[in-house]
Image 1 (cartoon, rainbow, N blue to C red):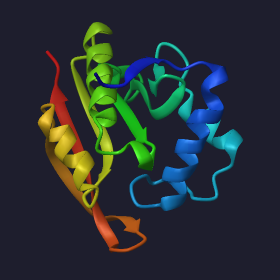
Image 2 (cartoon, rainbow, N blue to C red):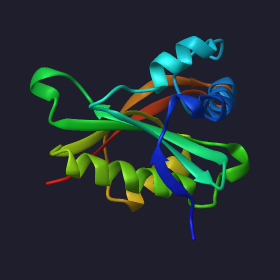
Image 3 (tube, rainbow, N blue to C red):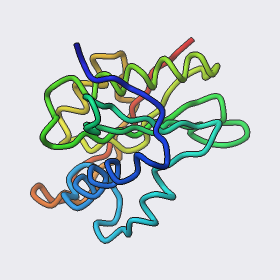
Length: 164
């Protein structure tokens, strides 16, 4: 049995922040400033309705988190987007897959026509493979758009999945 996914509450923030901070400071997957403050992270990550922020839990331990929302407003509001972060100690255990599948279920139920990820570092092989395995394809790659701490300038994939 995998992790349980549920809506995040304000009381979950400390567990979410530990993951967000770990991922952002590593600087190898998200184009967020490593010096981001906790308040900046909370405003960015805790998405208000009609969007949604979730956590993956095993008992009380927060293993991962996701947020989902309309990719753009107005004429682009029929396309969903989402972001996922998994604690390093929980990677490879199905947490990312559970979060992604939950986000897709939410997007379909909310009536979105497709889902788009705007910036998946091409060096983030685990995420690219996971997204492909649930049906996403690479719509394009922006060359040298991400400054990876080990690999230097690498591409950012735009990934897409038609939902209906």
